[in-house]
Length: 450
Image (cartoon, rainbow, N blue to C red; front, side, top):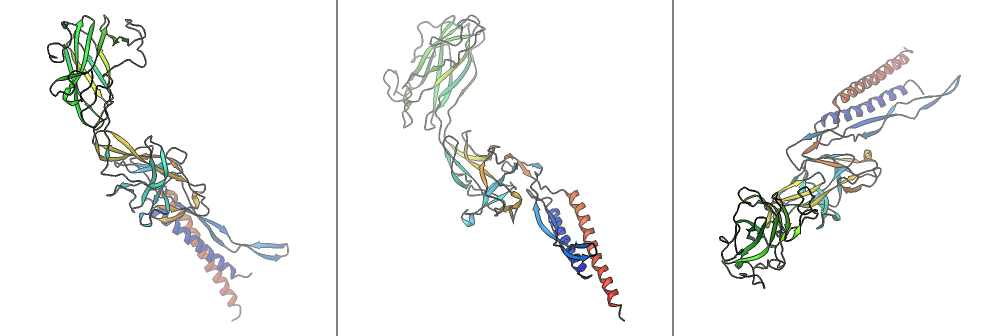
């Protein structure tokens, strides 16, 4: 081993530090790239040569080589955005994307969560790769294998028939009792107060349902719930059914109040654990009024067994009769008007009838050795022999969590990269000095014989 071997040690240093500068340059270039993970160059010394000396055999190094360019998957900080389909992963998970041009046959992985819905309803990244996820059954559970996330933008959601009405009213305790009771053919003169609400059948059609309250004595009232008889079929025992313009009573009962104006009985059932005790606890479940079973046989092809329960949140105070609030839980058919993502990874369709529905759920993947994933460009990675197989799951199942309206920024630390740049530059310069110094030594050898 002669002087000239130091030339090759210097060359190896130039090559290694040159490659390290390429890694640093790439990191700095991607300092603002969404979801980018920085890299670092790891050096290793080359196999040493053995030389013999008076003290025995020794080893002299032969330079340096690039061992590996290591990916650094530290967590990046999050940037808040105004776009709900911007997603950021916290933890070790990756979004799963696939190229539709290849039939979605090969999955790639990314931390860049700038997704959007394209014209066909697919959720895609800026390169047009499909985001992968799972379909959901009627109970919201994932079913089947990974498929591209797609929402049918022309889809409808079925109607929901009214099953419950919350009716919060006050009935004037100073009202005059009505003698003889309620007459469906003369409701105005045989009732004390009335309130109406639109209800839905199973097809999404609306029907006006009115409840008449009639005071029969100081602490006792009756209620009668009616619809237009022409809107229901002829039903045995329901007077006026099948006759348009006549009211058909589809539910009736009694209300009883205590001296403090609190409702204590509905249809003879106590609402509180101790009847008449103003401080007693309400019964659970709370007794409610209801339409007569089989009465709501609507005159269309809707479900003929609909029944509506009415929660009488009613008081009797010495103030005018008034509806404080009333709500019902039915809704008509709706068209898809907006798509969004929640932090459980559900793709939510918001429909024109005001009812959201979970359409699909996105998937995440994690690897035993993510540092060995292959970079394939456009912020994406591919599985390698050393990365291990991906573990695929849904958000929160051990593969990571997500944040909506957020993007993960690059984890490049510019201050650290510039320090590395300085040391790499010094290393390159020092190795070049090794070469020039060795050249001078060789020149001295050559000049021994003139």
